[in-house]
Amino acid sequence: MAMNTRTLCLGILSLKEASGYELKKEIEEGMFRHFIDASFGSIYPALTQMSAEGLLTVRAEEQSGRPDKKVYAITEAGRAALAKGLAVIPARDKYKSEFLFEMLLQHLLNKEQVDLAISKQHADLTEDLGAIMEARAHKGGECNDPGSRFVMGYGECVVRAALGFLEAQCPWLRKNKIKAAE
Image (tube, rainbow, N blue to C red):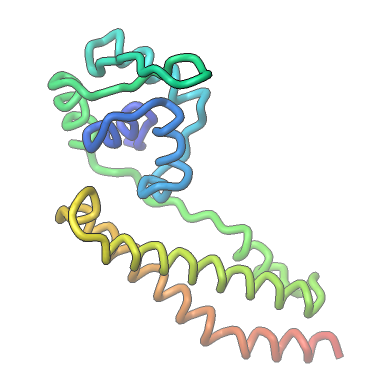
């Protein structure tokens, strides 16, 4: 069974209260960015439905110069629904990469395009590794429980392996690209 927006939102809300906007930020940029994508078009209807089902509470929080924001919190029924949603065998991981697509067809690119793609991928992976290491160094809070440590360790292994492979293959790839251009 595939992870869905409801389960993802319940998972985030099991750690802290949040508005729909804050949930989206966690999914796009926070520690939940590695799991599944979810749009505002799927988050807000899920929050509305789960609130109606009693899985969440919602309260208005006043904002200066703007409309009140809705802040959601998980209920005991929501925790039970989350546990049920997590008690399934996860779907196979999906890995999609525009970089790998370009490298598959790199024979159609010039040397500068290949170099740029490699440099960008290296920079992106280095940034990801830095974010993981910064989170691992964080003391306490949401980054210090066994689940977070496992996920960060797994992520660190994957990113380090990708960086190692990229660094080992770059000279070969660049050398062969130069030969192909001659």
